[in-house]
Length: 419
Image (cartoon, rainbow, N blue to C red; front, side, top):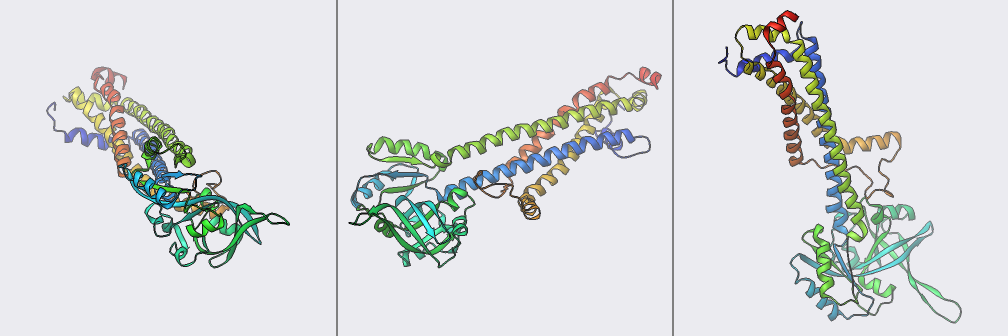
């Protein structure tokens, strides 16, 4: 019996887990351990997927529209001067593209109301090289700005607030004023809505408008062809390094900023929240693993008689140890399998569930005025799944060590006397 094949401990461990007439306690404790591990794994995978979704939305959507680095100047620089600056930026290895822009503050108004906005005057041909805003335009197109000089593209939230749709007219006011003998007059121009975009960020959907760069130059009465340069890099997370490199090369008259000035704190909060939440959920899994230890100890106490009989028949302590190691591993594997299914289903459906809750109870889970996006994203990561499965299995394996050793140390005579 001491030379028994590995299948014998596995067979006995499997019988202990199954429901039987004499093993209700064992089956119940096994079920509790499996449920604890399953819930912990399912919740951990789902939450990690949600955090990955936030990270992806920030990187690919919000940061896909916001320029990675911006170079601006109040000086009236010529086209040649801006061209030289653009060529200078291309000398840095991470810079992919650069495009001119006119950035200014303005006010959009209709009969329904008005709203202060950030105006981006762009070159419609070059803008796709530094921004992905055309990917988020669900009505109209970016190309319309080439055909319609006095066209404007606005966010969906702003369009709803001003109650305008594609083809409607809005007034765009400039901060500058025109002096005449009677009274100062605000500069404004009527624009036609040629596009409506939706990113999911309140700061963009409600406060950003895009117009043709020639129209912006006329509206804001600039002598220079542009007042800024939008730069795209190959790694958005390294944009600050590119900003510092540009600052060391360009004169102090230029203002150089990166996306971190606007969204850096939000992104850091997402990363920090992911770390804290992951730590707390791993504690939850740790509690489930501790529960597995307690369950196995109780199972060992319940099976003292069986252990004594096996020892009397010639089973070695090593074989007894293997039986309960197998039992712990089988419980852990069952919990992992069920938890994996729950986690994958939860990750794939959490967005739909959130939308269903919002529609059913007329509530908004994510307020766009507080969070960078107004929906619950999810992105299932294969690496996260593998890491969670491996981590939980190691915890389950470690959880079986002490109970298995305790079972192997039981003396047959004492156990039978107690029975």
